[in-house]
View 1 (cartoon, helix red, strand yellow):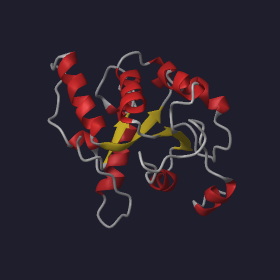
View 2: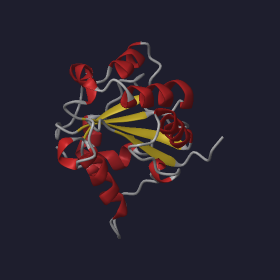
View 3: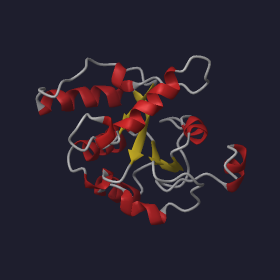
View 4: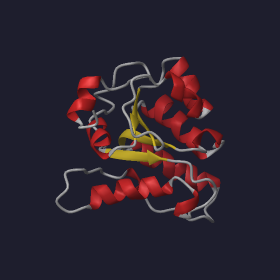
Length: 183
């Protein structure tokens, strides 16, 4: 088994690598936060742990690389944008492998939410079916958060050895959001 110290980031690319047309812009923002000198926001990016794949790579090559990256991950950030629920190939595959095989917690961050999340039930319709079914059958371990640097930084503490409570419907308390400076 690989050394599991990475954070895997999943997002819907919407069939493009052009940042303005997909959620890759949020992934790039997370990488920028992590790369900023003197900032305490840091991730070990699991995508940097294996050879890069190209658009011309076969699906099997891509699938193999994604598995390698997930196998070396302690958690997974799932960026939920407007079109994520419509993804019918890579995001569902990443969720299924992360939850069913790697048993890593998901940090589900919603790009269109900037306020505290106290109830994730109304947000479940934004999720791909692969995740909704794993939340329903209680096999997913997840916390639901707004797309916020401080909240995300704290959520990174959740790993395969330290999972959030809530059987896939984990949320932060009002006190936690006060500590994050959001209320």
